[in-house]
Image 1 (cartoon, rainbow, N blue to C red):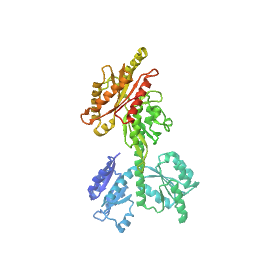
Image 2: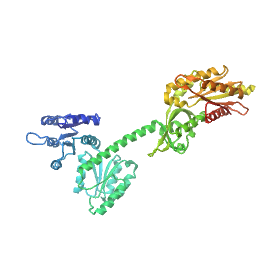
Image 3: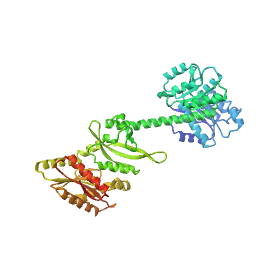
Image 4: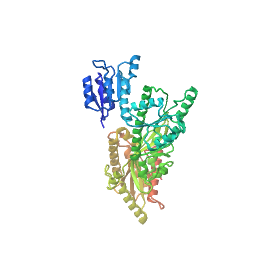
Length: 535
C-alpha cells in the first residue's frame, strides 16, 4: 500500500532528503507550495499524513496548516526556529508533532516520525486504567490516537486479561497502578512472563497518587517488573513521542534481527563451542544434516560427528590454528547419526568477549556432499591427474589380498605439504592449486612405476609401495623429501613436506595400517617438519 504524504514547505530539498533517508516505495511525497496547490491536492487526493510549514498563511492570515487539519489529516508542522511564543501557538493545534527543520537532527526525526506513523497505523494499544471517563485517561487516549494507534480500554484485571487473550499481537501496553480487581504491577509481571509478550513495550503510571515517596516506590516496582517508561499526567508529548519512536525502532530492528537469526538457524550449518570444544549451540540446519537433535549435540564435542576416514592430523592442525587465534578452513567428512556420511567445507574461528579474550569457537559449514560425490564418480583427481581416494580404496583392498595370499610385504607413505595453509592465505587458492600441481610432478618423478600415488585429501597424499619393506619405504620417502626440498616452486620458492611410513604386519587391517602412517606423519610434524618418520 502506498502512503501519500502532502508536503507544503518552502524547503524544496526536504522531499529529496526524506526519499533518500526513508528509501521506502510505500511513501509517495507530493509537493504543494502554494495555497492553491494545497487545496487542489486536498480535493483530488487522499493523504496518509501531511508535512506543513507552520508559518505559511493565506492572504487573510489563515494558516495553511488549518486547511489541512480541517480535513482531519495527521499533520506534522515544521518551523525554522522555535521561540516561546511560537511554542505556545503550536500547542493550540491538534498536530501530531512539530520539527525544527533547519538542521539534520530535525529532518532525521521527521523521517522517523513518518515511519513511526506507518508502523503505528491501526496498531492496537491496550490502556489499563480504573476509570474510562477520567480526564487523565482521556489525555492518554488522545496522544495514542494522534499517533494513529487504536486504543483498547480495560478498567479491571479481568477485562485486561480478556483483551490480552484475544489480542496476541499487542506491542504497546499502558498499565496504571490503579486498576480494579488487583495490582497493576502484578498484571505487568504476569504479562512479562508470557512468552507471547516478551517483546511488548509496557508503559506504566500512577495517576491517582500524589505522595512523592509513594510514587517513587511504585515507579521502582514497575521498572523492576519490566516497564520501559513511567508516565505522569499531563504527558510531555514531545518526550513521549521521542521515546515511543525510539522503542519502535528497537522493535523493528529486533524483528529484522530475529528474522535474520531464524533464517541463519534454518539454513546455515553453524555450531559454537566453548574453549574445550564442547558444543554450546547448534543450528537447526546442523541438526538436520547430522541427524542429531540439539539436545543430543549440546554438551558433546564434535567427535560425535567425526568420520573414521578423517586423519587425526587434520584435527591436530585445526586445534593448533584456532588456539593461535587464527581461522582454520578445510573440507571435512562427517558421520551422521544413522551411519551415513556428509562432506562440509568448514570455517572455524575464535569468538572474543568484550575484553578481547577468546571465549569459544564458531564453526560455519557448507554442505559439499554432492560435489564430493561427483568427484568420487571418477577415479582420477580432477586437478592433479593422479589417483583419487576412491581409486586408493580399490588399490589397497587388492594389496591386502596379495599380502594375505603370498605374504609379500608392502608399505604406505603419507606425505603432507608443510604449512600449506599459509600459501592459500598469502598467495590465494589459485596459487595453492599450482603448488599442489608442482608438488605432484616432483613426487611422480621420484617414485617407481610400480607405486601408486593417490591424493588423500587437501594437501595430504598417500603412496602405496608394493613389495617394499620398512627400510625400502623409508629410503623412498627420504628420496621424495630431498627432491622436494631441493625444488624451487615457480612463485613461492622452497616448500617442504613431511612423511609418515608404515609397513604391513600380521595383525594389520587397512585401518590400522593407515592409522600408523598417519601417526608417523603427525610425529614428523611435531619433530620439526621436513622429515620422515616410521611407526
